[in-house]
Image (tube, rainbow, N blue to C red; front, side, top):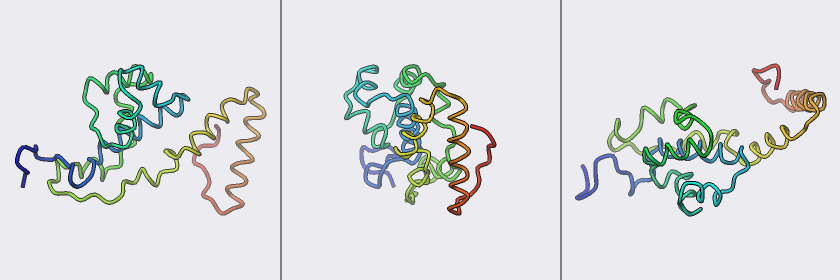
Length: 157
């Protein structure tokens, strides 16, 4: 049942829309990979860093024009923000499942959105010598295998 004056699918009382959380995590991922601060991103699109934080957490919904601006500043197509969205997030969007109480989003468990991973990737690509980068890559795979981690699907960096 919709609350008075609140559109159906609005999740202010039960948490952010899982799609908004996913889009926000993709904004954060790209911003961090570029080494851009929330403040710099905010300046580029006319927002405060606090507003950028709210977008990244999914607390504020990103409108179409803002998504367009983000795609230009972050140098990605608009579709980037929806890539790798888990099927259950898309299927359980409140617009498709009224009253849906979401479990913690899978992306919170995804190592690809952790700051440590992003910093590691940035540091890796700062290594100018391809041979050193390749040896580091092979060493990391060997350490993961020795510690019982699952092998990677890709054979090269």
